Length: 170
Image (cartoon, rainbow, N blue to C red; front, top):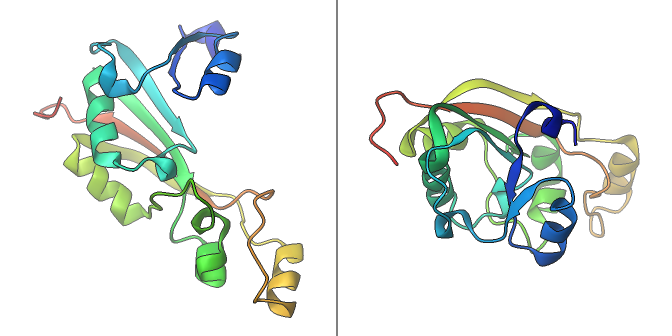
C-alpha cells in the first residue's frame, strides 16, 4: 500500500474475509467504529464507496468525528444522486439496484449531513462520465430489461470535510 509509506494506516472492517485480506497490509480493527475506543487520534478517515451502504450515516459521521483530530479530514467518495445516469436510467441506475444500497446522496444531502454532524465541506467535486455507449444502446433498445452495468464507474462525488473548529459534536 502506498499510503503506508506516508502514514500509519489502520482500517475498520467487520467483514471477516475482507478484514483478513486487508490485515496483510495494515492494522485492521474488526469491530464497528462505535464499538471501538480509538480516541481523537486520526488525521484522515476515508469512506471510499462505503457511505451508500450504511443504514445510519448520521451515527457513522458522528462516530468518525469522535476519532478525528481537531484538524482532521474526512474523505468521502460515494455515488451521486444527481448524476446523469441517475437522471437518465432512473430506478435502473446501478446504485439503486442491489441489496447493498441504503442511501444515495446528492450535494445538498451531503452538505446537510456534514452540518448536522460537525463537519464542513472543503472541496466538493463530481467525477466520471457514467453513461457509456453500450449502456445507452441497450437502454434505448430494451429499456424493460436494462440495468445500468456495475462494471462501469458511475459519476461519483468526492468530498473532503473537515472538523468544525467550534463544534460541540463528539
